[in-house]
Image 1 (cartoon, protein in one colour):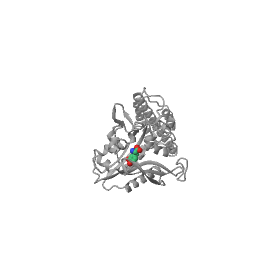
Image 2 (image 1 turned 180 degrees about the vertical axis):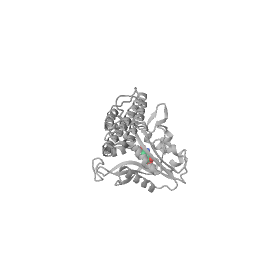
Image 3 (image 1 turned 90 degrees about the vertical axis):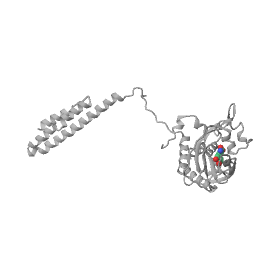
Image 4 (image 1 turned 45 degrees about the vertical axis):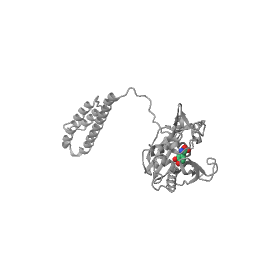
Length: 339
Ligand code: DAH
């Protein structure tokens, strides 16, 4: 019997199958209920007791080997069948490189994510806007210098149509179609007629926030901004609000965060002040609420606006704004994100 098993071991080793069907036939022949190996198992009863151990081991070896071999044949036949069907001859022979998200998108997503957790929902508006939404509804006087040709891109032949110079226009878009409570976060691209340099570009990105309801106070604004700064830049981050002026907020402020490069001690990045400016904010001017159909006797609100490039520079220490729009893969591939 040992000789027979040895012979079968060799036989099994040399098995071939050119299709899944053939492999299945081999399985039936060797491993099926009425197959060769089962027959041997039945004969095993007649093996003399002193040889049972050695023969039993050989028999097991044969069974395992047959199983392994036939499974492998099946798998090979399966993939062969698939290869024949599914092969895409038009596909490039080179590995397809996965892209990375743009650093500004990574930071925008992070900002939006933080405010979503605080109950803000996303709102967007057009980049080509009319004067009303960009300026008049935001309480800019007719002769406000921001409307100046040097700042705003006008659409030729349509003096009323501009490329929006800030995302505050989305505040107006939201208020005109929705009554409070309003709590929105509005990311988007904005345009300004600036000479392009390392520190200025003719387009960049902002995120606007707006919260309007009964009894909204400056304290609410400060608390939300502190939480944002600590989520974005780390738990140790401190904030400081400085009085400022914007036509659409009263009172208005600019917010600085403690410089995370020197930890507030003072360095060239923060110009030795220990603070870096990151956004503008304030209580929505009652004139803005009224101009947009919201009763300022009932409601108050706060708003804030920040530049995404600025936040990205702070987080990733990008020194030249032009890097963001040059599409240099060596730069873009340095950034990775979880989603
Ligand atoms: N729109 C301002 C700018 O482009 C930024 C800003 C400041 C937005 C204060 C606001 C705000 O909503 O309250 O410079």
